[in-house]
Image (cartoon, rainbow, N blue to C red):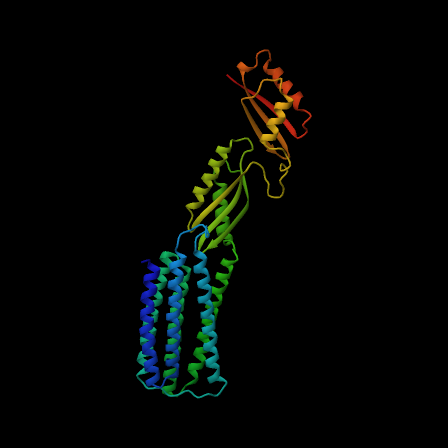
Length: 368
C-alpha cells in the first residue's frame, strides 16, 4: 500500500467519524451551522474516495497507450478537487449572505456544541499537517490539494465556533462576517489550484528560472556548441524535456550520440526530471532545412559508381550535408591505385563529379 493511499484511507476514516459527531451534535444541539459543517465533512469523505482512486491509477507505470505514464489522472482529479474547494467557498459566502443581508435569524445553539467545534478544529489541523508533510515527501500535488482542503475544514469549524460563541453572547453577525472571510479564502485557494491544474493539462512549460537552469546545464556539456527548440512540460510535477543540440559538423554519428547521452545524463540528475529527448544537429535547423532536397546515400552512391566507374572504388564514403550542399570524403586503399597516383585520383574524382552542382567538396583519403 502506497503512502498516498494509506494516508487517504486514514483521513477518510477520521473525517467520517467527525462528520457523524457534527451531524449528531448539530441536530440535537440546535446548531444549523454545525449540522451544515457535518454535511460538508461528508463531502470530504467523497473527495477522499476520489483521491484514493486517482492515486491508485495515477501511480501506474507507462504502457502502450500511455507512454508518458498515468500522471494526468492525478492532475484531472486535482482539478476536480479544486473546483469543489471553489464551490464550497461560494456556498459559505452564499449562506453567510442570507444572515447578513437576508434578515434570516440564526437559532441559539446549546452550549456543548462548542466542544464539538473545538475538537473539529484540532482534528482537522492535525490531518492537514500530517497530510501536507506526506505530500511534500512523495511530491504529490493531489495529496497537497487534499491537505489544504483539510485546512479549509478547520477554518470552517472556526467560523462555526465563532458563530456559536457569538450567538451565545449576543453577537450573531460574527458568524456571517467570518464565513464571508473564510469563504473568500477557500475560493482563492481553489482558484489557484484550478489554474495550476489547467496549466499542466495544456502543457505549460516550467518557470523561467527552471528553464534557465536547464539551458545552463546543457551548454555546460563539453562539445555542445549551442541549443535550440528547448521545450518543457510537466505531468504531476514531473518534468519532460525535448531539445535540439548543435555539435561539430564533422564528427561521427556515434560521437554525436555520445554527446547527446551526456546531455540526458546531466539533465536526469536535476530535481523532478522524468524524461529527456535530445535531437543532435550538425547545423542549426531551427528556422530552415536547407539540405532536405538533396539526394540520400543510396542515390548518391549510385551516381558515384556511374560517373566514376573507371576509377578505383572507395572502401568507405562519408557524406556531410551542410547548408544545402554535400561534402564527400572517399576512403581508398593504396593497394587499389595500381597506375593511379594519389594526386591524380583526387583530380579525376573531382572532374567526374563536377557536374553535380550540389557537391561542394570532394576529399580523397588513403588507407594503408
